[in-house]
Length: 93
Image (cartoon, rainbow, N blue to C red; front, side, top):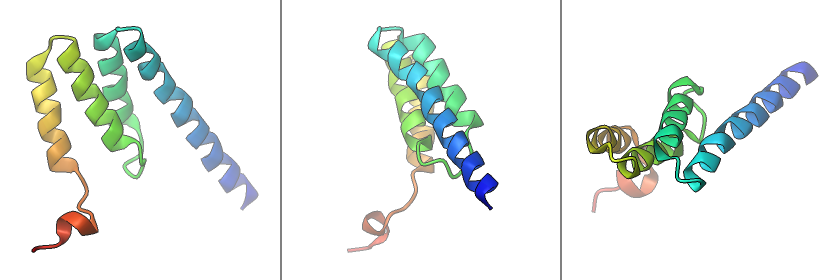
């Protein structure tokens, strides 16, 4: 059982370090490279990774800033379709 928690802890650390690279590229103004990195993380991370929506949104914003509006729009649409329903959005008033 200890091995399992260590390996999942290791994969969380790897995911966090992987997500640092796109953030650094974004800060440097390397928007196309950042977008590709955010999107690669989005496509390769586990389905239950809590950073998936953020990575997809950041990829869309980065593509927009990289002057790739069609790709940005497609990812924004995917983001709005994929967004999980929360108790706030699930309520009908």
